[in-house]
Amino acid sequence: MKLGRSMQAKQVFSEKLLKENKRLNEIVDQQKGLLVVNRDIPDGQAIKDKTNVDENATTSATNAISNKEQEKMVEEKEKVKSEQTAKIKDMEKKIEGLSKQIAELSTEVAKTNEGKQKVESELSETAKNCSYFQTKCAGFFNQVVGLNSKQQESEEEISFLKRARENLRAQLAEKDAMMRDSLRGYEDDLEMAQQESGRLRRENQSHTVTIRDLESEIQRLNRMLDEERILMRRIPVQDGSLF
Image 1 (spheres, rainbow, N blue to C red):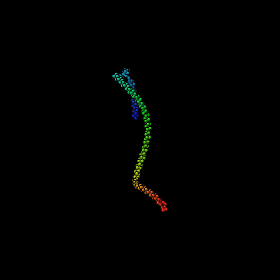
Image 2 (cartoon, rainbow, N blue to C red; image 1 turned 60 degrees about the vertical axis):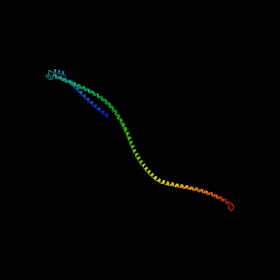
Image 3 (cartoon, rainbow, N blue to C red; image 1 turned 45 degrees about the horizontal axis):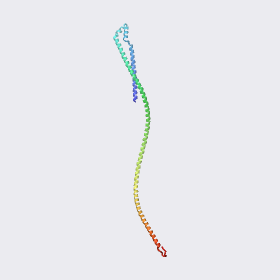
Image 4 (cartoon, rainbow, N blue to C red; image 1 turned 120 degrees about the vertical axis):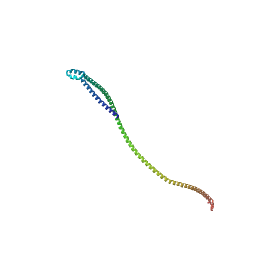
């Protein structure tokens, strides 16, 4: 935008210089026309000659115009002519300077136009890149929106799973308490069973000892019985045979 304003300002200034140059040329032409008109005005000698020629015919006119007035008119004409010539030269210098400025500005404007075209080309390329990146950004934005939606769904699912976990923990705690209560009864029964088992083990051991004692007694009695049988066989009966 700065480049565009600078170029516009230079173009406006160039147009102003062209108008000023045209105006000065018109003034120079007017001054040159005045010089031509002044050249047509008779100088002092011509007036004198004309006065001499017409002296006899127009005596009253000769008496009216004196030599001093004629010299004054000639001086004024030369002064005006000199001033106009100086003005023309000054204007020609101004015109020449303005022409140079116009040429320089035209060259600069041409360069600026080239730069403007280059900048416009770069701006066009930049606009294309911006459009491309805007499309990319729109795609990324849509992806971000999709990801945010998925994240929200995931957060809701995580929240649901957390609630389910807490419910499971509560259920597990309740079941654990129930199991502990049940185990207390089983522990009491187990302790009683262990006590009964110990009592039965002790009784079994006592019965085992008793059985062993009885077995020993039976063996002793069997031996005694065997001995009695042997003795009985050796005792003679009435017919003289052995029992």
